[in-house]
Length: 281
Ligand SMILES: O=C(O)CCC(=O)C(=O)O
Image (cartoon, rainbow, N blue to C red; front, side, top):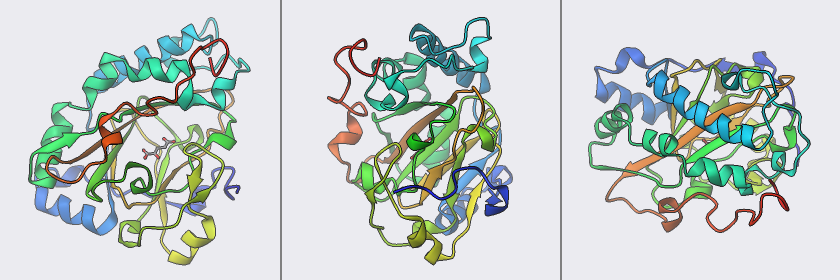
């Protein structure tokens, strides 16, 4: 099944509500999260740490000949190399290498996220080992993540929250993330086989019937988007000519809540290409 909005049409999307002004008022933040299913904070996170992760991820990408020669690494300019990796990033050797990066793993336990969640969840928290460091390619629309609820993949308690973090400014044309406002109040929705990362999604017509609005923004470095496991979200297409989109995902829940064992394991454990040269190298 294909997604309808193959190119970003800004009139179809509202803007996220920025929640920085509520950071001193945790009960109000909690209420907003419950009502809207997401919170968005502008430039809250440590930019230097994010740039270090970006550098580490793009250095690995360069080793796989994915960075255009003569360009600055941090610009993330794609070499244009034709490779299976574009289609099968999540089973590639490169992805496996990213998941081992110390900078990437450590960021899931950074003090801002820890403090924020101890306030939001009012309990001891647990950050999933199933972290995701993602690179998406320009023009690879068949791989764009379709609409879904994270609960479909992560199982366990519904009270799990995803933190989506770009490692650079991520204007909509680079393929940001969009959230269906208030969709956390919908039921667990049926996911069907669909093109795009994950391979399963919720058909557009089901979501249109909900009457809810899609929201997104032109992300800045340091921005944090967090949302409930029932909140429907999707990626936008990377319609840039040659730029890689580099983003991070960390998931957090209460320590004593139900958890699926896969959340405490490496993402895609057991699914990686055995040999970079023969598969999605
Ligand atoms: O970045 C993407 O393409 C997908 C992100 C996502 O689905 C998530 O963070 O749960």
